[in-house]
Image (cartoon, one colour):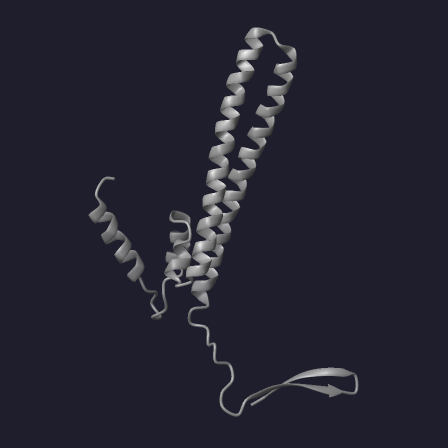
Amino acid sequence: MRNPGKILIFLVILFSLKAGTGEPNHKVPLFLSFVFPGGGQIYNRRYVKAAVYAAAEGVMVYGAITQHNRYKNSKDKLKFYKDEGDFYKIREYEYYADRYKRERNNFIWMGVAAVLLSAGDAWVDSHFKSFRRDLFIKGDELSVRTSGTGLKLVYEW
């Protein structure tokens, strides 16, 4: 690592950025989700989501690496059997090489999708940080009532 002190200072500055209205900067969690698995969710204080996204992205990376190693091994065995001239083993390892390559690529694409989903979720959550959760003020009422044609959802203030 080049200089961990500079990286730490950069992250502290990044976490403290605010938009002009006093709201958090919505680009920060978006950026953090691209850099760290679950980083945007941690910034938004959504720790369970952060753990889920980090685990999902970790599984995709692990799967891609595992399938890539299997692909390399099957290619090596395929080359060996081509040199030997064993046609049955050649067909078998051509199948394995193709299968492992497809599975590796699928894990990569699913990992990209998980990162994009994580970034989008962090961005949307950052917009809802200032959303008013107490919709009902004293005296307000939400009720379901029957009418001549069915049910009505009524909000009275």
